[in-house]
Image (cartoon, rainbow, N blue to C red; front, side):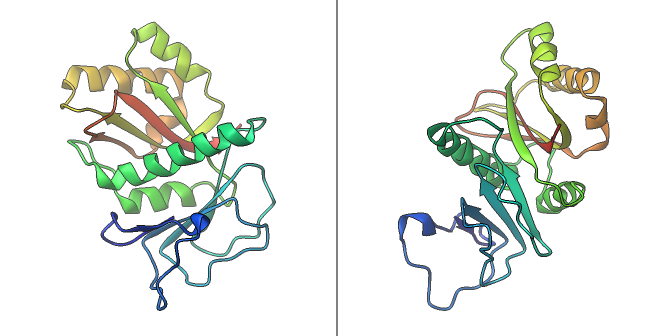
Amino acid sequence: MLYSDAINQRVDWATGVPLPEKRQPYDLEFVLAAPAGYLPEIRSSLTLFVDHQDPERDLPERCFQLLAPSGISKGAFDVWAEQAMESVIDIVRFTGPVCVDFADLVSALNASGGRAVTAAWVDCECTEQELLSKLRQLRLRPLLCHVIGGPKLIHMSKFTRILDAVEAALPDAVEVPLGYGIHPNKRTTLFFLGVPM
């Protein structure tokens, strides 16, 4: 999938939809389950290789690997990959009172130190103790945290409660970009990008 500077234009190369003859670099490009030696012909601002298993890619500058959790089936990978790509795009597509932007995304990925990153989600529609328990089960070092809420603005006390739980369960998350975007169709969920542990 390719996303332009308008962030809404997309082309799904995996389903055979032809690319434009004179392809321009995109701000954000997803390369889904490509062969290990594949490299994009055009250098986009940011390219994320979304992989089921680690093919040990040798990635050039501005290219990163988004790796599914180990042990998931092919069918589960397809669902995970779609959700991960959508969540990354939602960071810049659906803004809110506390925004992270494209530069924060790039900084977070650069903080991975060249290691593969993974994505995880935590449903926040629960008690404080349940939220803490869910957060403590995450097996990643957070690089970016984004609260996705909707369809209405959540009360700031709820946002603060979520932040307090993240800080208590994941002390490393205090140093990472954290945002909140209002999505028209989503329950309140925490989205993480991080290095698997």
